[in-house]
Image (cartoon, rainbow, N blue to C red; front, side, top):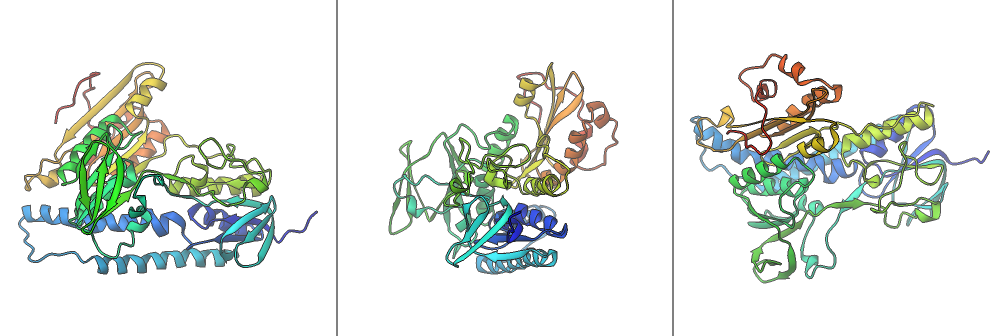
Amino acid sequence: MTDYDYDLFVIGAGSGGVRAARLTALGGKRVAIAEEFRVGGTCVIRGCVPKKFMVMASEVSHALEIAEGYGWSFDNAKFDWPTFLEAKDVEIARLSGIYAANLGKAGVDLIHGRAVLRDAHTVEIVGKDQTITAEKILIATGGRPWKPENLPGIEHAITSEEAFHLPELPKRILIAGGGYIAVEFAGIFAGLGVETTLIYRGPNILRGFDDDVRAHLAGEIEKRGIKVILGCQHSSLEKTATGIVNHLENGMALETDVVMFATGRVPHVKDLGLETAGVELNEQGAVKVDGFSRTTADNIWAIGDVTDRMNLTPVAIREAAAFHETVYRDNPQAFDYEAVATAVFSQPPVGVVGLTESEARHSCPGEVDVYVTRFRPMKYAFTGSDERVLMKLVVDATSEKVVGVHIVGPEAPEMIQLAAIAVKAGLTKAQWDATCAVHPTMAEELVTLKDKQRPGSVAAG
């Protein structure tokens, strides 16, 4: 048998790669992991975690408005961008350090550098004159923001990665995109007092989400002061002495200080040497894998966003655990992508799990029952706000199972985590109804919805 330097070599120290490396090392295998940037990957360094800090910082302005309705008063309340950035960066560094320390405690060798495949069992650490062999290799390099490089003036735009490190808070920003990253950053900047415009080429934001959710959120974010322009995209960007002029295909020209493109992410596969190792890509440019995360090379696997299956941090972690069970514990496991809950930290936030109404009508064998409610949260009773919560249950009428839950409103991400347990367990609408409500809460609406929505009808506010 060939003697390799390591039993497993992992390329990419994000959430998925770190989990796989630690589990395998704790099982007694020789493991190394390479990271070209900082340990923690997209989620910890330039994604979920710093974004959530920005969301929480930006929500304070709305909380102050609510507080004033309850009799509080605030004089000279202000936000300092440099102070926030410093606190955020200190915390991110701390978390990255914890990830690195945990790798060390597990016995994983951490290599700082860009790893490139030279063949199916060999990687080179670029610029370090270092070559390493491994019996098995795991690719966990994640994804990177995409922007239209052929757009005139695109060099003047930033992506979400640069948004975390802007030297100063702009007065005006235009965000191109309609997905969760775009609407989240629109809420962030608007909440921090930035004049915010969101443009999207599609007919409505959040493509792939339930249509009621999409329409409801579009209206709610406009109430927060975000200007939404749909069915439109850039024709060019022009740098001027006073800002950046956004020339749009509908003839509009808007000047802003910053232009951010949040128009999607792509698997990070460039210059990894995949072809030399026999690793093929699919039609979308992601690493092609089977149900057990094995690539087209027998000894190479891939997990997380680089496979473009379901690009969520908890999913990458579950894929990592399944990889370890399959490869090193003789317990073949494939992650179940059905009924995975997700949240959009827009303002107001979104929480969803299961099927949209449209998906249910196409996949359920018989009729589909829909229950919808829209109401003003109790918290806003004293503020005069006309913001509304949306809650929607999608039910397979044949089995009576709740197959989809969709929430737009305060604490939606917290509620959907618990609702996901019921959906994953296949509980019926009768079982939801038999659950006693907690009063007064918003969540009680999930177990008190009684009236079915007729097709084509609009639920009462």
